[in-house]
Length: 482
Length: 70
View 1 (cartoon, rainbow over the protein chains, first blue to last red):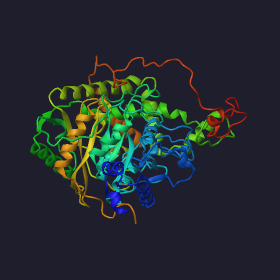
View 2: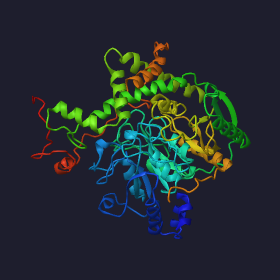
View 3: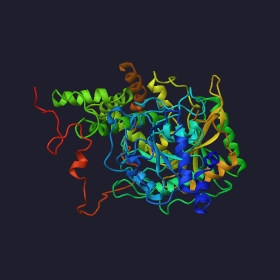
View 4: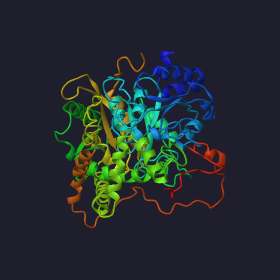
């Protein structure tokens, strides 16, 4: 059984197509592995009950998948990591999950996450933090921390998550796996519980770049239920590129500073040399507005969230509290008891930024910065094929290390937020191990590659060639089971 | 929480002083305009399914406290 779990999804899929591996045997092995979760990574697991029947697959198995608990699944609990949705069983299934079921990927379980995807450490979940399989004293990153931990910890073959400002890429980096945020519009958002609608995007968390390509190929596409969805022209093929010759990789001059961990910088610099070994060219580019990404993001995302979260009013679904008083009192009690501190913080920031008299100074200005950042990338892509950065300024930090300082937590998104604001695709691949500044265990470091909108195929080809060149094969000691 | 919010606003205020006169604001990154679909009736959620998750449904409707209650 254990050997089955070592296969990548692509390898397992090919073995099933060839008739060498039975779908039932493969799925059963993963169900058994998932049942050994000691990381608090799953909020719900398929144990073959009636709920699972509600999301049954349409055809033979590709591979069971872990799904971030932000995607609605008919009849199966969907909490978005929030107390306000505890026990909620949606009446419909999100398009992303529907496409997986149609492709033969049953839902193995729903994964823990920061409440409404607001967080960079998974410590904002109402259901407790997820532990990093590399070191259980550390965070797995967030907000898709559960999805990253199950893949890294051997509790799922692959997973989907959502990325608003780095929520796929940063946990992928912290857990030593591949995470891809597609172009905004590549994958339908229908049934994906909204945080910041102009930024949210669904994407893969996988062990390999090939598995990410396989998964994106299933997920992408225009959807009548999401008018902002476009899909990727020509779909996604499995990558096979062997070198990086003729490709130019831009390193932002603004990100060459000393303001991130030395261990991360060493792995990043080493990866740049690896790119050159593979025939790629390293070029300096300028993204002058990128340094304002965090400021713009933490106006725009909370502003959109404050509007989106108004739907949780205790009337139509979810939790209701204080229903004996008048309507306003019921709203207030429900939200006071149902939302956690980070969600309240962002709703307040958002409503403040949108309030009369402050709208232009905050929201209007942030939208203009967003234009500048998108223009920065367009300018850079005139002379390079890709922009590369570390995925996060540090390796996985300790549980509780940043919970008292929300701004420090936000700054962890420094490298990932600019791509989100520009709507372009970006992938994080594991590039090596490093100690945290100040000492500690060797932990994974992610390398981020970004490319122009809808150029996912080219991005995956380059990431694949680099992945082969790096040959990262470290695994967490002890994994996620006992 | 007051101190935390002040700290965040102080950081965010850095963009307040940028000269962005004449820059177009971006609300949506992908060039899409007037995405329309055919105006054809489609099946919708049955009433009992729509009400299944409601905290206190009554008589086939959502029930909420009166907005005019004292």
